[in-house]
Length: 330
Image (cartoon, rainbow, N blue to C red; front, side, top):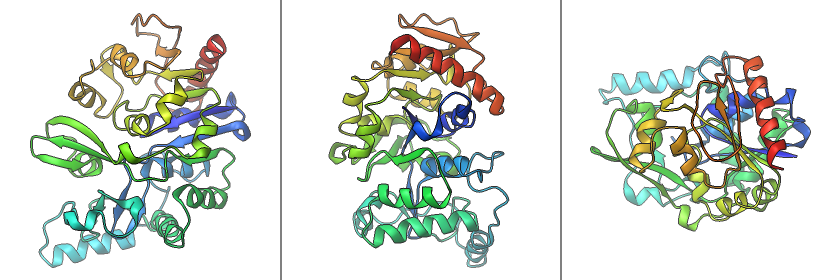
């Protein structure tokens, strides 16, 4: 058995080739939910859904977001109505008193659907509607995810990191904003001051997640702050990682990040934007997989390979390096 911690696109790309090494029937994936939003009343779980669509063979692999060949009639009409009404485009965060009203799982991340600042396809929206309706019927996020996983014929065990609300809030020189507003609507342009995982001090890992973390753990080349940070802030997860073999794949080649805002986010949180900084952020990691051009000395076991993943063959190569690193520390 092996468990992957997944957020953003780094770990899903690794998962795209993992079947060449790891039996999917003996694989669990814990998805970050700090990036989730409630948009127009529907709970959107981007990092969980990327794995859902990937493993269900429906992911748009050009965007690494949403369902391939999805239409977007509803989204386009929402944008059109807003434009015709003269409404300024962009995210419309609901008032403070609404952020803690309604379903608990959506706290601190409620956005109006007017103009819809995130591109949501029609089939993708059906998933969000199903998830939200199951939660409104009394199911937990974990239970709703299991229903969706069954519908998409997943073989891996897909688990949200918690059934409690945790919202990634980026504090910037223009004020605090949810990560989706910072990254999707603003393109990561505001200067970052700090990152808050709101609600994490009251959140706990589910029993299913803790069971999965008793097995060896793989952290793919995802953003250490916004993809892994929310998980590490949840009670029980960091402690579990300290007790099990953990291998992490660096999203950097020395001080060059592969993609995304990981470098700026790490510096804002006091880490060096480099592989060395990733190692500092992951003190529980027993071994690392680094790129062949990354000569960083971490003082821990390291397996080197070409860590760029442009297709499934690349991902399988990195997965084999991960397995080699796991064998060295188990």
